[in-house]
Length: 174
Length: 417
Image (cartoon, rainbow over all chains, first blue to last red; front, top):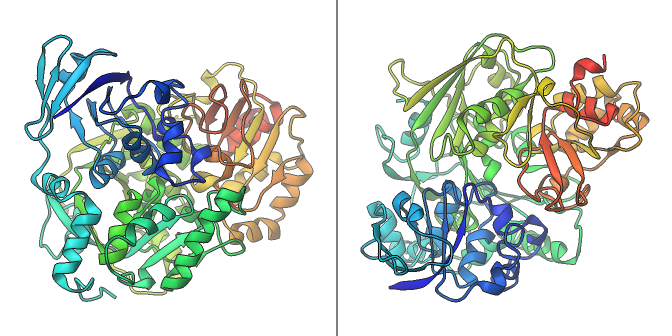
């Protein structure tokens, strides 16, 4: 069960806003996270506490493919992101590295900045503890659930390679 | 099946695929760069294989912050360079490098019918040659470097049909800015965009690269073009391995078909801070600019530089404007030199840089101060994209960027001639 205070943002939060490119000359999560959300919310890093939740409108994480973005969010202590929709590369990246994402229009409309929210990831249930309202997120497709349960794409690939005893899966195409 | 579905089906050993289906796709080329490779390499080391699945199918390009802009960038590139030599993969460093999405097509590394994945959102550029190409993250690329394949959800395909003939100063950039303006920055979220119609048949390859490049700015997974004589003329000169041309079935299904008549289209300008804020250049009013950037993976090719030079020839850049021209690759730089374009730029008072992504993402080579405005042939105008969060970026084609550099305000190329 995840529980935390909500940091709310609008539509089309791009990955330049989540982690500006001027910091992409580093790739260490601990250093990146010091600048998380800096260009749209300078105080985010000071306010955020472990377990807190980002709630945003549509197309969260659009723009650059930089994995530094979900990495910075995850390392800041954010336990999950709830949005009406996610940009697809951000969605992949988050699933791959184990930052939980939940899609629910009703939840986003029914949650305000600063609310306390509780999330049951297994059941996809989002509860606004401030208002008492409850919402259900869109369930992950089966393959993605499996990926999340395995512990992300690297662990999934590690197991796959180990069970195949090599990384030759196909006859070379050319 | 449509074009994208045919390519994907052939790459997962299935007779057919349908939108929404999860598949494991074999890749023909896996790309990363000096920003995304360091994380990919770190993750690759955790998988438990010593060698990449096939060094001939993996390419790394140092292009975002090179020649190294500072010590930390130098460390990142070093990490990538060491890995590249250790693994024997294809690697492009200073002297051979170019902006990755200008470079790989030029080198014949992306070909019709390929599946290409890259840890860079503008990997979708290669759809211009009739490949299925899509951007991913570093972890995806780490896994694919180990196994050669990657999980994908088959996207729904939106077909765009552009009717009519393009006007004199109107090109691929205007078509794509207009399209994003119409459907929004998430108008093609998770979908692939297929570009067709009379205007596309007549669009040269460079314009197609520009359009496919910006599919991601509508949320698209890929932007794809049919292979025609233009494509074959382009790839035949460059290909060093066999490739396969796929055609969509006559009865192919699409999630949506969108048609535009572009015969009266003006050059488009996207206002801050979203690529979807597209307006015809004549409707803008007076917007003074401090900088004009002509280059990037969107518009850093030779025909872009020719257009800019045609306008700047014999003219002077406005004294209050910094005009920065960035050829996309060393070859484009050389071609521009042979054709006399570089001389035109320098005589006009523009500066010509070596290939780099530099200013497009606010890296270096043209960062904006607070309150400054830039007209730019790049692809994103998000808050702070080119520097200060108080600066503004206006997206346009090379003709508009060149004309604006001369007048000092956003201008139609018609004003110059």
